[in-house]
Amino acid sequence: MNDEGLRLLVLLTVLFFVGITCFIIYFIVLYRSKQLKNKREQEQQQYAFQQELLRAQIEMQEQTLLHVSREIHDNVTQVLSFVKLSLALAVNSSEDQKKAKIAESRELVSQAINDLRDLSKSLSFEHITRLGLLKTIDIEAARINKSGLIQTILSTEGDVYPLGAQRELVLFRIYQEALNNALKHSGAKHFKISLQYHPELFNLTLEDDGNGFSARSLDGSGGSGLKNMENRATLIGAVAAIDSAPGKGCCIKVTLNPLEQRLYTDGYHPDRLG
Amino acid sequence: MNPLSTLECVTLLIAAGICLLRYQRLTFPFKILAWAVITSFILKLLANFFAIKYKNNAPILQIDCITEFIFFSVIYYYLFKNKLIKKAIAVSIIIIVAAFFINAAFFQPFNKVFPTYIYIPSQILFAVFSLLLFKEMLMYPVKINIVKQSVFWYNTGVLFYSTTMFFFLGLSNYLAEHNLDDDFIFNFWYIISDVFHILICIAILTENKKISVTDE
Image (cartoon, rainbow over all chains, first blue to last red; front, side, top):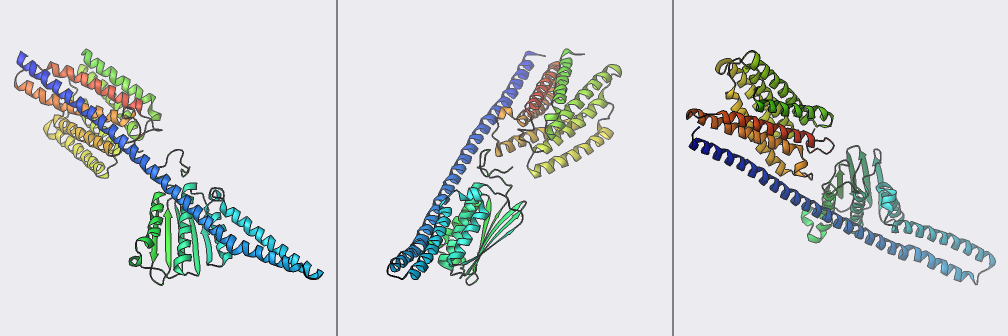
C-alpha cells in the first residue's frame, strides 16, 4: 500500500471512530439531561399533588368544623337550654312533676351526649384512614339523614377493598363537595350515593334530584367547584363525569382503576397497592 | 488459523459462556440474544472447520448471515415500544428472508460465496434500528443510570458493528479498485468483532430482569 493510500485509510478510519464515539457521548449527555428533566417534572407533579391534597384536607376540616358549629348551635345548645329551662321550672313543681322533669332532662342530656359523641367522631380527621371511605360516607349519610336536610340513600356493589388513604381522602372530599352543592343550590330531596367495587374498576356515583343546571348557566364561581372535582379526580388517576340538565338533577360519576399507579407514586406512596 | 481469528473465537466463547451463566436472570429479548451468541459461536466453529476441511465455508457463512439477521431483528422487535416500528421490523424480516432465498438461488449461490447482497441491507437495517431505538430511549428515559442499562450497551454494540461493517465494505471496495492491500481491513474486522462481543458481554452482564427497562 502506498503512503498516500495508507494516510487516507488511517484518516478515514480515525474520522469514522471519532464520529461514532462523539455520537455515543452526545447520546449519553442528552439522555442524562432528559433523565434530570423528567425527574424535575415528576418532583413538581408530586409537589402539586401534595399541595392539592393539603388543600383538600383543609377544606374537609373547614367543612367539618362548620358542621360541628351548626350542630352545637342548632342541636346540642337547644337541647341543653331546654334541660336548663326544665330544671329551672322543676324547682317550684310538685315531687311527681320534679321526678318527671328530671327523667325527661336525663333523656335529653343523654341525647346531647350521644350527639356530642357523634360530633367528636366527625371531628377526627384521621377517621377516613381508620374507617375507610365506605364507613366514613356511611356515618356521614346517617348524620345527614338524622338532620332531615336531605334524604341520603347509600348503596354498594362488589367486595369492598381499600383504595389507599390519599385516594379515599380525595374521593371523600368530592363526595362532600357534591353533597354541599345538593344542599346549598339544588333544592334536592334525595341524594343517592353508590359505591361500586369491581376488581379493576371503582365507581363512585353521587346523584341528586334537585334543580340541575346547564353547562352554560355555570359562571366562573359556580363552575369552579365542579372543575375542582374534575381536577382532583384527575390527580388520583380517576375520571369525573358530571351530567346535569335543568330540572333533571345532577349526577357525578367518578371512575377509577384501583390498580393503576400514578406518575408521582413511588415505593413509599400510600396509594401504592400490592 | 489467524491469531486474530482465534481471539475472535475466544471472545465469542466468553460471551456464550456469560450468556449461559446468566440465562435465568435475562429478560426475553436478552434470552434471544443469548441464543444468538451461542448460535453464532457454533457457526463460527463450523465455519472454521469447513474452511480447513473443505476449503469452502460459504454455506455456513450464508446461514450465519441470515440467522444473525433474524435473531437481532427479533431482539429489536421486543425492545421497541412503538407498534409501527415493530410492524416494520416484522415486515423487514419477511422481506430479507425471502430475498435471502432468491439471492441464494439466483445471484450469490449458497455453496459458493458470502451473501453480500443480503449482508449489506441487513447491516443498514441494524444501523437504522439502533438509531431509532436510541431515539425511543430518549423519548422514554428511565431512572436507571445509562451505563447500567443493558439496552444501551446492546444498541451501542449493534450500531458500532453495523456502521463499521458498512464502512469497511465501502473501504474494501475502494482498496480493491485502487489495487491496494486489504489485509488491514480483515485484521481490523476481527478487532471490531471482538469489541462487539465485549459490548454484548457488558449488555448481558448488566441485564437483570428484576430491574430491567425492557418489556417482557
